Image (tube, rainbow, N blue to C red; front, side):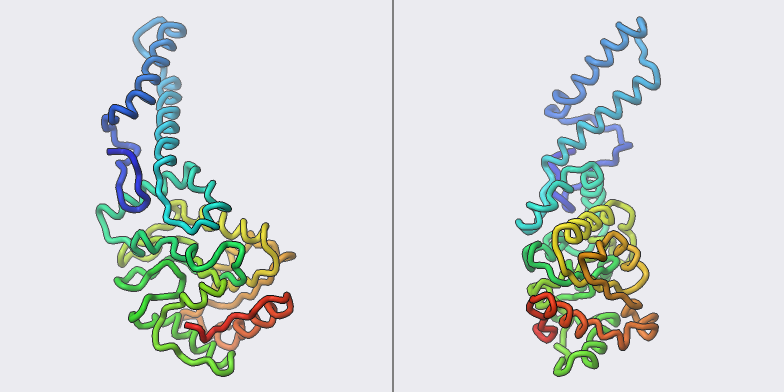
Length: 297
């Protein structure tokens, strides 16, 4: 069946596939379409055939109607405060297509993170309580790693190399920091540190496999809302990918700290010794906000 679409779990067929519509959709879309086509035929052509342009227009209208029906049935497990501010994104065409793509991917492949964790970052704190934003790229693509927070892995999964380097920098930057013995950064997220990947899903063992499918548009909308509606946020942009995405941030309203990515391939090009964690807390204190307890993991 085409609808309803449960985000990331029930697949929809490819738009190119010519499959019969269910009765409800047939009544609301196809029946009307064929009536319009018949009238156009009688009034404009005087024959039993439509022009290619007319057929294309009819097909475009049909697809738009189907997308509107799909948007009304997409279920997104997002935090309520976030839904109130960015929920309009879920009714847009790009997100409907994205939901269909992810649902189809889950039918044929293993996709990370699991559906209930894709938007876990929206359940850690209210959108108005965000103080720090860390921008990542896409989720870990191995089993038992991705759980909706960039750089983070759930207990008892061992910290990946990039996160180990983050801990190493913290140990030299923040007096008293101790390695937590795990890689779950939920404790930071609950204090207002938004750990946001640009792309929120990935096919198992295929890094960047879900890029350019609509996630970037969605997370741009998240960053744009934060940038335009809040003040004094600290954005940590590690690596060229995050820095490029950060171009939409209003630098007159917020603080930008950027350096190389904490990956073992680039951490020694600026990440080590950047002191971003102590600098973040200093900026928060100056704006009258409570600093982050980086040890609270």
